[in-house]
Length: 235
Image: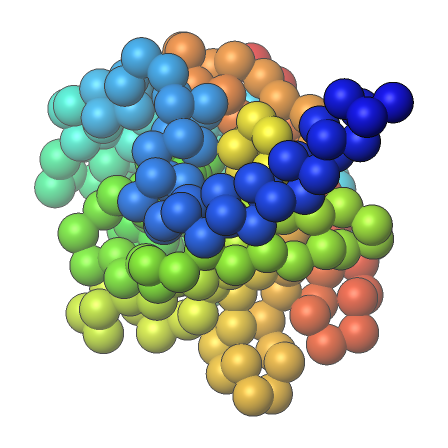
């Protein structure tokens, strides 16, 4: 019993010490080792499927292809009876709607289908499905202090992240499993004092071209926990 008591005493002493020694740089390295153990993200080349479920919108099925080494992005979307695509090959942009390259002003307005929007989708998907690797991108400002926070009885390591003004103005918090260092949730604020923005809960994982990506990504408002929808990943 004395040995067991001593063991628990040591654990109680060492955990606070370890949390103090766990810097943002060390935590980021550990989560990258979990999600991208072979350092493949910079050369990522694969297709994956995302089904978006939302209480107020029709089901949206998307096929995303990324080839980061060739600056290639392709998005194919099916919403009810309509389908459209956006392809970026370097600086070249190509759009289709129901298999036609003719995009009328009415279609562009209703479906927000244009090349600027295509670039937004490229940045959106490569950022979200590239986390936590994208936290290594230039312009990312990571608070060197690692915090701890418990949510619904689960304790997380937490990183606070902001960006250079040329990159973005939101404040982000990333929550990591304290044992595996897997990214488990994150949230962002446009204005933290107003508790605006959203938070995202990540569940389960899929291996996509050697990257451990969250399978289920559920979105909620920070302000009142309203459920917004879930992105379901498949490959």
